[in-house]
Length: 438
Image 1 (cartoon, one colour):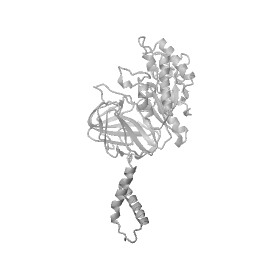
Image 2: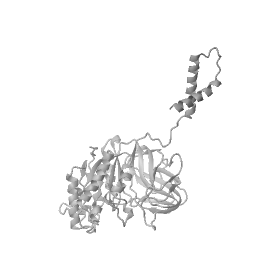
Image 3: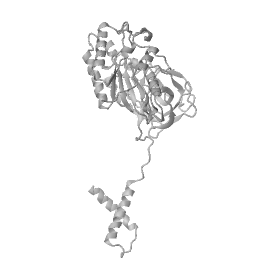
Image 4: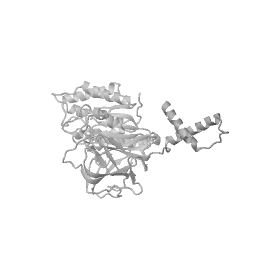
């Protein structure tokens, strides 16, 4: 502090010769006043130019409106290799807003990811963007961004009148050769890949081929809403075997109900972080596209979700189904995993809703001892009192005549995953009165 004051006084004295005063009028008091004024002028000069608003303002309150959980890597011969091509990815918002931004992810990549251009707009149909809605996205004011391996990137916000439950087109131009190492493989939504070139600004994207995944894109966010519900889970959250391009996951049904049943300012976003094959406790070594365990991906897929206020846990059946005699999963193992997620959520002021595990008799992974464990896990979820609320998905989906099986009307045919009717029943049964943190 003393060094700074000395520096300021010296700067002020250098300014004094710029002013002329008669020796007769330069009294000690006036000299002190003059020195103080010069010090103020020096301080203003040293402060530099005034601050200007940044395109990446930090004063806004962002809420996720759509999200997906990434996994990796896909097989080398997968369709997720691109070279100087443009992707147009389609997602559906849950809540709307007047400003939007996106989150891209290279968190599972081993090399930097270069995005040459990115745009967002409302979808008209197919790969077409609705007229008047196309917006260029920037990253720190730049048209493109290079995302380091292991990192995400947020775009700058843009003005866009985004309705709730809207179809949104996000275009990403990939100028180099890219193997998508961070993607959600089971989007159940058609995405579009262009021939060579930057076609991000094309109202109608020329289409070379289609994909059924969401490479790199993990969130769509809006400004000013009241929070989000994250649903963390496996294939039943992901919507496995539901109709493609129809948004018939049970979380989509919940989002529509919340939009219809609440005042606009109190409607939370609903963010689906399900991955088919995902486990609570460990990874599937034979299927990297099943994602990291819920315990491993919790920070990325839950805590990093903008505006998250509630968490629904619907996970564990893959742990039970893949339990082996050589390495059995126990009730204590499952309870310890759930308790870890509850504690980590509560530390971030997030309320936790526990969902019971649906029946799976008749599925390839079924065994009577596994059914006994499922029943014990469900009993703990219902009665332990450790969750802020319980969603009894088992009761919704089970056959009352044979409770270890899915109700036939809700069975997609593999005795593990519901059909569209089963997902609709889940979405309709989820309580709209979401709990607050204890």
